[in-house]
Length: 338
Ligand code: AHG
Ligand code: MN
Ligand code: MN
Image 1 (tube, helix red, strand yellow):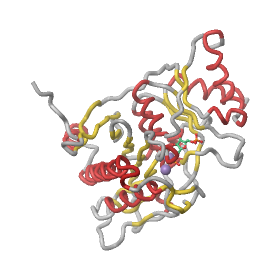
Image 2 (image 1 turned 180 degrees about the vertical axis):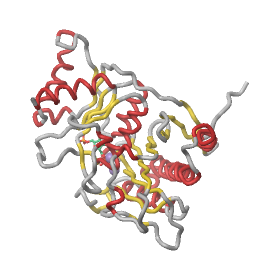
Image 3 (image 1 turned 135 degrees about the vertical axis):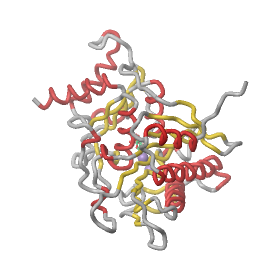
């Protein structure tokens, strides 16, 4: 007997029928993003054969050197999304300002934000990378669209997800009703549902942090990791394992699959920056997914989804994953503040 396969399209249609929160424009948006990710996956897979490795020779607004694939993925996402009539504007980690849908196309009610290529340092070494996206609704009551419209807390997201380009290409999605995963069937050319109702276990014995920054961390982070490292003999009474891929998509994907805690906290290297990761393109979509899977996400002081962005490229300290561990790190921050 062949197993019944559910495509992304069928999933979206059925979700709309059951819960009514994927209206036509949003469904189109998600399908277009999925199609763009398929194109990006093809480039990623070609690697050196497609001349997509190495640097583009340019810098983005954050002063980071752009890789060829950062630029390619950004272009693919823009090109795929600008004509459908589902968007008013887009914002990306790789663009200085917002990209308003040109007026030769109809304007839609959504706004798309993305990190076109996450894990840039892993491209050339053939390690998992991905695309992260977040969807907001354009605020009502005025015509046109401005940067200001994008400065909404993550709790306002209509949808969020990522596509990981790893051993499998997998799209992970939430529209605010749990998390579903779809793996690309290359022969068929479509994303097929492989898991719905993804859940992150509340407890874990696995943490992810870049340990090379240890000497720069704030005391609560240092305390948490020290206690993990102390293992069975320490206050936690159990041994911990560590993983750090340095692609947020890959680290979060592992956490959605088997639990864990991920931290890219503020540190003293650049004390004026709240963190390394970007609130709108990385922290918000990942926090939405993690919360929808029963996990938690904080900057140490506040739930990430409640942070009101002050600017487009705002950065934030990120602690997310298994609920009980995130709550423990939060408690350590509260104790340190008292
Ligand atoms: P990007 O490639 O989009 O700039 O993001 C890289 C991010 C994130 O994916 C990862 O968790 C982190 O940077 C890794 O940073 P370190 O190299 O400092 O560990
Ligand atoms: Mn990134
Ligand atoms: Mn990126």
